[in-house]
Length: 296
Image 1 (tube, rainbow, N blue to C red):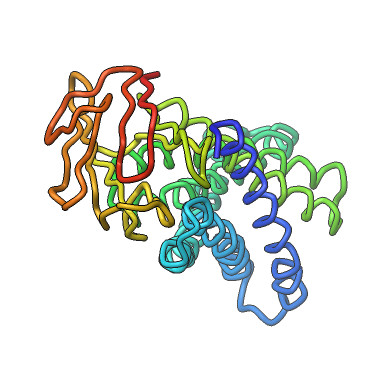
Image 2 (tube, one colour):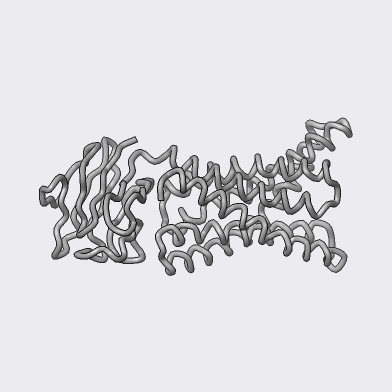
């Protein structure tokens, strides 16, 4: 998958998450009178959105790499973080409402049209933090967590503002909630992919085989390559591949490739290597697969 297609893919994932969350949000709204108070209703609504948003985003890397194990674990992590993020985001939004209303927006008009939407958007941004960090937490990658936090926050606050202002255009409208949730997921997805792309300092471009043309962002400190579904770069279907064949590690002054010690060697520019610093334009052969290493 090219970098441009990654942006489209995450945007589509976000829209699907929003659309599928919508009927469940409407269901919560239908049973609002059965809940104890408005805060509980808001928390349940936030958790419902969080489950779908984080669950879908958690499955994304597994879908890209065609790894059922990554999909399963990503959804599991996503649902857990979505529940937490939905609850935290809702409570944070209520806190921002009180804070901004008390100290900044004494005017009723300013509070209604600026303070209240901004406060709630900050709550959605808190949810976006959890949604964006799912994959980083699953892989225990600080770089992915950082990228996800930035992208999730930006997408959450901008998407949240659109969501809240749609309510003014279409008050109490099912349409506004559907479109608002779709925009929320769309923007979290777009900003997640944009930040991930911007923060990556190098990529691997697959030159041959069934996945030819796919690009892998080197965002983690260590990126392992092999045919094991647990590897960051999973090359299932390529011959002469070890479960973990090669590891590329990010250093302060660049990237270093290390062969993992299997029976099939790793080649860089047709030279068999054990450890080697990578240069822009190097061709790496891992089993049957060949990559072009590109610095950004």
